Amino acid sequence: MSSTLAPARPARITLALRDSSTMLRRNLLHARRYPSLTLNLLLTPIVLLLLFVYIFGDVMSAGMGGGDRSDYIAYIVPGILMMTIGGTVVGTAVSVSNDMSEGIIARFRTMAIHRGSVLVGHVIGSVLQSVASVVLVGAVAVAIGFRSTNATPLEWLAAFGLMALVALALTWIAVGMGMVSPNAEAASNNALPLIVLPLISSAFVPIDAMPGWFRPIAEYQPFTPAIETLRGLLLGTEIGHNGWLAVGWCLALSALGYFWSKAVFDRDPK
Amino acid sequence: MPSFVMPTSRQDDVRTPPAAVSALGLRKSYGDKTVLDGIDLRIPAGSVFALLGPNGAGKTTVVKILSTLVTADGGQAQVAGHDVTASPHGVRAAIGVTGQFSAVDGLITGEENMLLMADLHHLSKREGRRVTAELLERFDLVEASKKPASTYSGGMKRRLDIAMTLVGDPRIIFLDEPTTGLDPRSRHNMWQIIRELVSDGVTVFLTTQYLEEADQLADRIAVLNDGKIAAEGTAEELKRLVPGGHVRLRFSDPTAYRSAALALREVHRDDEALSLQIPSDGSQRELRSLLDWLDSTGIEADELTVHTPDLDDVFFALTGGGDMNNQPKEAVR
Image (cartoon, rainbow over all chains, first blue to last red; front, side, top):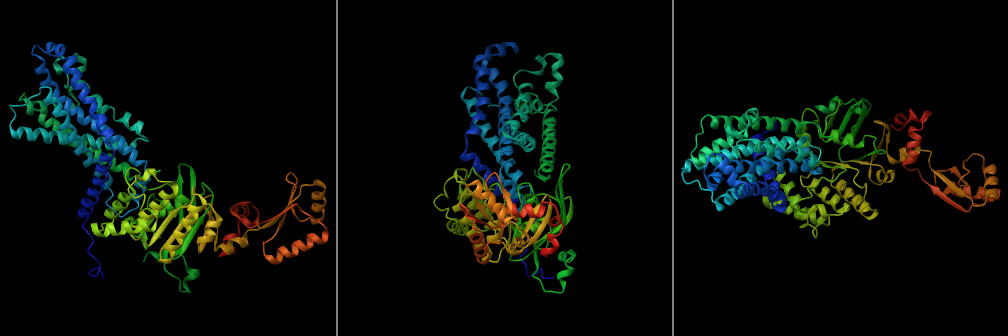
């Protein structure tokens, strides 16, 4: 065997890390070069935040058993932050769908690189974008009076960790949606549930205040436990079993999105 | 060794160069449409091979299978000594592919595209920059290197595409219709580029719709029609198969046309266009004797043109039914 003479072949994991970070750089370059898509998606949660606080705020807070507008700001900010993630990953679905129609993906498939690196690059890039978006929307929330003074640094850290985990889960799902969509319009339609689900969660009104028949829909979906957990971490409300539920949802969705995307990517292209 | 799988018994007694690409009985269908119906290929290392065929013949599918982009339904193929199904990674490490549709990232600049390739080939930063600068220079892209690739013209995109393919220094290059859609100048530039590749000892597998292109570039040509190899050989061998070379006489006076048609008899008549086609290989000797004969019979055409075989002729000859259909493959080999 002449293997001693040949240069050592890099381990699989080294190859995977290296190629994935190259692909991540490519994605961040795209995001930096064309920031309009990301910024457009940021508008929705900010507009909703302002709308619900300044236009509907008095009615909403009155309807929720007294309290003033600042109480309502505190109530909806966790939901708005989760919605921000949902909006950002819609952009991911669109950009994955666009990317898959590009000739360069065919080139990547014929190169001796880690096969999943294209997708991993998209996912990590999108999670970073989600975190950045959350920070921006959070800054707007703070500017209009949101305060989370009671939270400990550990709770802050946990809140960030939770949002990153939600972003990871939703991103993998969005990548799968982008991969099965033939074009950008279809991708944006397919990813619509990621924006609609927070609207029908406990983001804007408590589940108790909803009609009875609707409560199961609002309760048994990933956004509600995630939002309740975030609320608990930032504002000190009761978290209960929502923490485990949120983590469980995230892990399950991540796994589902990962295997789904991988299966689609491994299929022969048209 | 994978190459022993190939039934090359005819060539076993002669020393042949190792095959860079070999395929046996490749099959592929999409739905109930059979695209490839048993393709055999053997391409010696360091040669240029052209797969010639009309749109929809299956050329791109052959490239996709050999470059591990799609899997064949049947048959086997080795590229650079690796089986495309069993060891796709080995194949990928040896090849470069420039597809029919540009495989560049339009959102980033030409230079960034090149550096991306360098990173994916695990070149060091310094080496990546060196190779990028060198190839951008070689393909005349320095000026445009800081502009997004989506703003490039067709010819520039194709050059960037090939430059990106060359970053990893592949030993076998697949070029799927490298000149389709290019203007004549870009086409000639591309031919020059391909010739340079060959002089570096690279094996080139190219597909084309143009006989002239195959003629210019390839050592061997296979004609793909309807999912099958209709003929294979050198350009010369193929042209001999094709009776499409002819001299065309065009008349403006119907009377002159009719009398010429009567006098010449053994010709293909086109009464609408008032033109006659006389089979000819286009050589000086044949033309001279033809002209002498026309003079002696007093025929004066208004226009005389010499046609050498083109792709149309090849296809009419190879697929037009009759005996030609079954013979060419054996006849050429």
